[in-house]
Each structure stands twice: as C-alpha cells, then as structure tokens.
Amino acid sequence: MILEVNGLTKHFGGVRAVDNLNLVINQGEIVGMIGPNGAGKTTTFNLITGILKPDSGTVKFKGENITNLKPFQIARRGIVRTFQIVKYFPNVTVFDHIYIGAIAKNGLRADRKTLEPMVNETLQFLHLKDKKNVLVKSLTIPFKKRVELATSLVLKPKLLLLDELMAGLNPAEIDEYLELLRKINRELGITMIVVEHVMKAVMRLCQRIIVLHFGRKIAEGPPEEVSRNPEVVRVYLGEGAKYA
Amino acid sequence: MLKITHFLKSKKTWFYILISLLLIALPFMVSEYITYVVVLTLFYAMIVSSYDLLLGYAGQLSFCQGAFYGIGAYASALFSIKAGFPVYLSIPLSVVITALVAAGVGYPALRLRGAYFAVTTFFLAHFVYLIFLNEVWLTNGPLGLRGIKPLEALGGIDFSSTTNYYYLVLVCFAASIYILYRTANSNLGKMFISVREDEDLAESFGINTSLYKLVAFVISALVAGIAGGLFAHFFRLLHPSTFTWLTSEMVVIMTLVGGIGTIFGPLIGASVVMFILEFLRFAPELRFVIWAVALIIILIYEPRGLVGLVERIRRVKR
Ligand SMILES: Nc1ncnc2c1ncn2[C@@H]1O[C@H](COP(=O)(O)OP(=O)(O)OP(=O)(O)O)[C@@H](O)[C@H]1O
Ligand SMILES: [Mg+2]
Image (tube, rainbow over all chains, first blue to last red; front, top):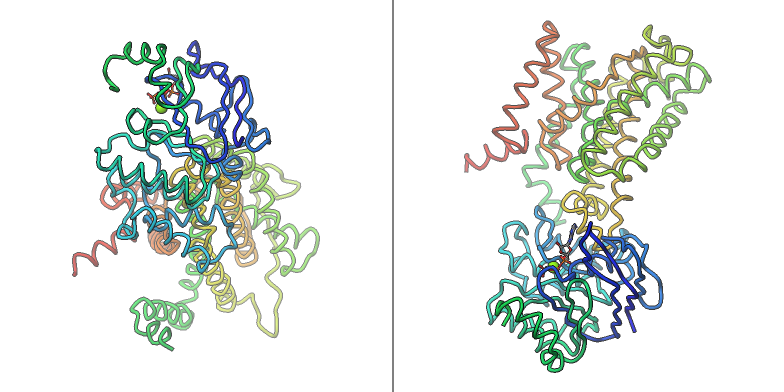
C-alpha cells in the first residue's frame, strides 16, 4: 500500500466536492478514476497534493500522515501531479523547464554535469529532443502537456497523479500515450492514478477503476466489472451518451 | 586555449573591456562633479540590479529598495558616530542589520501573494522614512545626520578624495554585479525564475517557493544596504528626504526602463535616469512629470525596456 485515504471530505459552500472518500492505492498499480463532470476527481487530487486542505479525513503516503504538509513537501516525498488545465513555465525553454525540475529534485548544489544527462534522458523518453530550445509558451497544448509530464518525470516520483492528460488528443496520439504510460509504470516503477474522460483509454490502461459521483465512491473494481455495474451505467446514461 | 580565442573574438567581450576602460579612466577625463554624479549612479546601479533579481527573476514587486538603502546608510553612520566604530566595521554591520530587517519583514509579508506583498513593502518604506524623520534622538530628524566620518585611509590611500572613493565604489559595484549575474544564472536563479513563472506549479514540483522569495528579497536588500553604507561615508550627511518612498519608486522605474530579468538592463536604466535627473536639476517640479511621460511611452512601445529596444535595433540592422 503506497497511498491510503480515509474519510476525506471537502465542501465548497453547499457543494460536497469530496464526501467521505476512502482510497487504497497499491505499489505499482495503474488506477483509473472516472466520474461525470463535477464528480470531485480534481478536488481529490488537490487534497492529496496539499493544494487544498480537507475539512476532515486523512491522507497517508507510505505510512506517513501527509494531510497537513505543504504542497512542496508532499511533492518532495514523491507525489507529483499534472494539472487538468495544463500548467507550465511560459518564458523558459523546454530544456530549462525540465532542468528546473532536475534542480528541484537534486538540490541547488547539483552541477550541470549531473543534471544535464537527466534532462536529456527525459527529453529522449518523451520525444522532445527537437523542441529542446523552444520556449514553452510557443508550443501547442499537447506539447505543453508533454513538457509538464516530462518535468514531473525528472522528479522521479513514486506516485504520479494525471488529470486528463489525454483530453483533446486524437486516437493515434492516445495510443501513443497509453504505450508511454505503461512504459513509465513498468520501466520507472511509478504508481499512477489516472483521471480520464476517454473511457476506452482508461479501460485499456488500468487494472482497477474507481468511480466517483457527487464526491462519493460509487463503484470500484476491474474495468469489465465496473462497466457492468448498474449504478455506474445509470450515472453515465443520466449524463447522456457523452462519454460512450 | 580555444575558449580564450573565442572569448577574445566575441563582440560582447570587447564591449565590456571598453566600458571597463572607460570607467577606470573616467576621473581623468571628466570634472570632479561628473565623477561625483557617476558615484551616485553606481550606488543606484547596485540597488537597481539587485532589485532586478527580486523583480525580474523571482517576479516579486516590492517598493522598499529605497528603505534598505536608507537603513544601510543610517545604520552605518550611527555605528560610526554613536559607537565610534571604524567605517570598515560599521558598513558590514549595517549590511547585517539591513538583511535582518528584510528577513523579519519578508518572512511574514511574502506569505501574502502579489499585490498584498507589494503594498506591505510600500508601507515599510514609508515607516522607515518616518523613523528617520521623527526619531530625533537617534537620527537627528529633519536636521539631518552630520559629521559622518569618511572611510579611514588604507595603505596610504585617502578615501576622502572623490577620485579614490570612486575607485572603491567601482570595485564594490563590479563585485556585486558579478555576484548578482552569477546568482541569476545559477541553480538558485532558476529556482527564482520558477517562482516568477508559476508559483503553484513550482510548488507542485517540490520547490519551496516561500523560501526562495525570501532569499531573493534578502539578497536585494543586502546589496542596497551595501550601497547605503558606502553612500553615508561618501556624502557624509544624511537627510530623511533622500529616502522617501519616491526613492523606492525610482528604483522600480529604473528597473523597468532598463528591462527586467537581465541584471545588466537595469544598469543602463539607472545610468540613463540618473543623468536625465541631473540635467533636469534646474526644473525640479518638471522632473517627475517628464519621468512619468517617458515611462509610459517606454512601457507602451517597448515593455522590455531599453534592453528590448537595443535588441530591436540590432534585429532591424540585420
Ligand atoms: N475552488 C473551488 N471553489 C468552489 N467550488 C469548487 C472549487 N473546485 C471545485 N469546485 C466544485 O466542486 C465540485 C467538484 O469539482 P471537481 O473539479 O473536483 O470535479 P471533476 O470531477 O474534476 O470534474 P471535471 O471532470 O469537470 O474536471 C464541482 O461542483 C465544482 O464546481
Ligand atoms: Mg477535473
């Protein structure tokens, strides 16, 4: 068990964004988290990473209670996330963007000789080599997301939280990403929670799926089982055929 | 060897050599008055380029560089007058005091983001000015602090001469610019940039943004404190009016005029502004009007400041 969430609750005014949520994530897993718009997926990520403080409940990472730590302290312990609305440092080059991550991981004293190979390796891994000297702000959104992911990877996280990484990609690009995420999981040994609306992708990628609705967990299990769950079917049909 | 030839071939290198030679030869080429103005300009250049580390790199807008300049100046003067310390001790002590004030104010204030931090520093600047003005027992208030000792002669060099003091200030200036430049381009500088670019993202990458903001703030204060200490024993008369909020405002303007995030740009900004102000001495009321207009024009046509302008001219030439 790498992550354990107990009774996590967050209200925004009258909205129960996350409601008494319990989660267990095991080392090495790729877990999918799905649910209609406003189900509380992003809020869950914000609570785990310390960007939001919960009204009640705890988050334990590798046995340590991290509920009241600051975002940067949580990141240093090995939980790194990407943002649903892509975040990036606009006025730096792709190389420097990842380099900043390498400094964050290895400390101010680390010299260029140690950091540069790490950055180059990451650039290679995500096929960003030819974009190395381009300013991040001039990239397209999919490439910005790739830079955000690359910087997350250079931090060598133990747990990676991906918030709609594949939104807006075409089927071929989604296939590429699925392969990439499996590789990150297998070769780098990184545990992942993946939030996606692209149902087919989640079904193919994840061993286990958690379904949220109005901040509550309404189903959990292997993809086939969850997709046959009557409550899940009802929730998604209620939403129309939007995600079919 | 290859490096050295490359170094000598670079246009930039020759530009810096030329500027250095000019600065070294300056007292022999111009009147004492101009040398005197250049010394004052060098103080501002130090304050402004260290401010660039805070604004241009760490992205934090503050309005209290003038206060740190003043604290450095008053503290050093008081250490030498009231405690009788040699200037060689009073300046370093005043720098420590300036850094401590910056840390004490910055620690809580930098938890406030953006405008709140800027407003806090604005009040700090005014508060410090009011202390200079009203704590007569300490600062001699509006009468000004007189009888400040010059820097003691060292190895037969008399620092009460403008020319000799000029060289001392030049060395301090060159050293601080070098250190600031190295810092800006170091890992620490990259951490500052990450804070400027996106604080939340930096934090989620494990970067302690509050710490780095504080470090940038303290470094900028520290260099301003050095300039203040050097100023006190050069001018040898301190008056609160030198350190009003306008001084801090002027630092911001010089930095913006020069172009932020370059360390060198603000140097140009400081020089241009100081000389314009000197030449407009005959019309003190007009100075700030001309100023405001010049600033607005620059920000509209070249928001990157004079550095951006130079780059644009270069591109057109090509
Ligand atoms: N900062 C906030 N302030 C107020 N309400 C919020 C805030 N963040 C989220 N909410 C509300 O909390 C609920 C859960 O939102 P959340 O963003 O977690 O959903 P989500 O599952 O990520 O949805 P989506 O699929 O659209 O990204 C929504 O009703 C949303 O409007
Ligand atoms: Mg979301």
